[in-house]
Length: 255
Length: 157
Image (tube, rainbow over all chains, first blue to last red):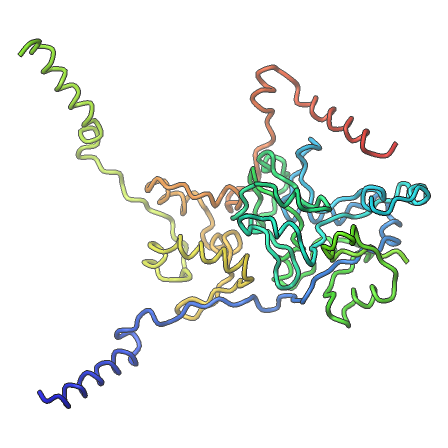
């Protein structure tokens, strides 16, 4: 065989092997991953809590019950071991940085809704040694329970007490489990995740949907036309411990 | 050889004892696992799933939770929702008849189900008093009393 023919043959063989599908290139077909269609997206998710509306119904627990049911949060009677994603507390505990004896009298018996603040600069994320908790691009401070080793650094870092640790197996304390969402196991930290699993399906968070009075406004803080940024521009609001510089994304509407 | 009558039976007993797993299981075979397969097609071929499902699930959980990539486009172009409870188990309705059959056979214990809820599990066990409480016969109510007194301490006056 001449050199010229040999080179021609080799070139032709390579072209056939590469171009004809399934000949030599069986693994070429790529497996792809895409975000779900119809998901709600934002640049920075935030929540505004309208306290005036919330205080009209002091005994209402719709949002708490909806959240805790959807996410299989156990109801543990022992306060030292309890798990909470969203709960209520009084003024002096929620805003300890604003001590005011007259406000304590004025706001006596009024409860404030508490949950993870999904900070812009979350200290829990900085401390997590396994990156089990991390900041998503849409502002949600996310938990990857697969990675949590239960060191509780994040709990020490969080200035809002938004995180709970599973001291015991939570399963016996879940009365009516939701088969669409996992539970957690002993030795794992958990908290509110702004219902990332509902946003993926195009639904608003469970607490926002459960509130009959419309006291919870959820939306994109960086979108000028969203309801939440319009409300926050027009009414006076406060955040918890803003002086710490964590940049909470949960706002309490007062005016 | 001294003590021949003791040493030789001793050696025979020792060899038999050490070889116990060999002669005990000789000629027997455990039937191969027979997982119940649902009708229809899985996300990938049977052979691929059989050998690679653990790697696929591991990639899936990172893609879905950490990158927000919830849709898997398989090699034949079909699209699937990534998830264990909301994906896999929507076809494989029974963990004990599918996952467990091979996992028990191969003696592997993946920890998926510490958190994920198997589809056949409708209710969890009710809370039991701990071993120490039972040992000293302390009624579990005592804990609830403690909790409520603590609440009064921190709650409103």
